[in-house]
Image 1 (cartoon, each protein chain N blue to C red):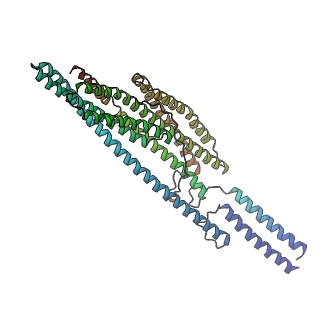
Image 2 (cartoon, chains in turn blue, cyan; image 1 turned 180 degrees about the vertical axis):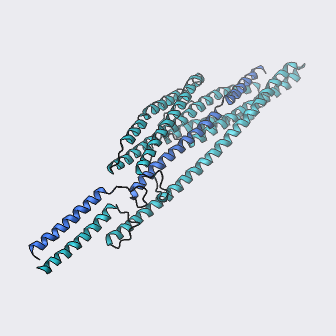
Length: 94
Length: 354
């Protein structure tokens, strides 16, 4: 091949390479709604969704604990135990 | 010359084909599930994508199994708590009746006309006092048992749980031993019974202090855990925003929303720290009135503030999903969350054992 042929080949290569690089730079990292979206991107999104859902569950768990402990520490229960304790003091009158 | 030129064009076209295939494969970041290209590069990407999906699916399954295990444990603890609480309430009903019976039997002593009759009435009163004291002790044991179940499922540090559990167990063991001791005391031993009754009365105060303090610490500990989860969520959302920004999306508004949500967290942390401090001060009966109630009010405030933080972060999540152009979870491609280990809350426990 002569010099001119090499030049033509190099020009074609350079054009294709430049086109490829340009196309890659313009391609979104994550195509919205596409099932062919990159796995890492999907994992990232679902992770925040799951974290949020789990935190919502934890808030609900707190509320359940708060109700249970309020019940355990209820004024009525405290009053009954206090009354029993006072009742026991009557033993000194035996 | 013409032949050489033709060869050059063929060479260039072949190079262009190879280059474009490499560029396409690279740009898709390994995802080629819908690409039926027969090129060797794309086939390799198919395999690699499939392997990653298998690993993710296995991880997801393991996480599901773990979640189910945690749920089972939680259900068991819930059942144990309810059982102990129901027994406690049942004992409360019993001691209400025992108290009335004791007062009646003591009143009967004075009504007797002979010393012998009075001694018999005294014996019945002592038995009544023993029954009441025994049931008070058992009620306290049940109350402590219910608390111990809540402690097991709490988010306090394991070392703190061990310390508090030891304190609760000491109380339970003392009360159980006293119930046996009272049961072995003759009804004629009025003096011994009076001493035992006084010990139970004093111990009742100790248990009350422990129950209030630990109940508060459990609640504050759980709130602290939730705050750390919100912080993890905020950091994950920040990463999501960074990825969107890198992809050329306009993230100015969502960044501002996240910043606003994160700015609310320190105030919640302070409220919880203040609540925990109040609960730790419960070392006397007098402190129950002041410190327990103050701690409860702070817990209530912190819970409401935490709700606001969570809503603010949810709005950020929604905005991120909108920027992605996909309104929410892509259920067809559900992948497991990144395992996060959030440190539980450190507490130092003031012991109130007698």
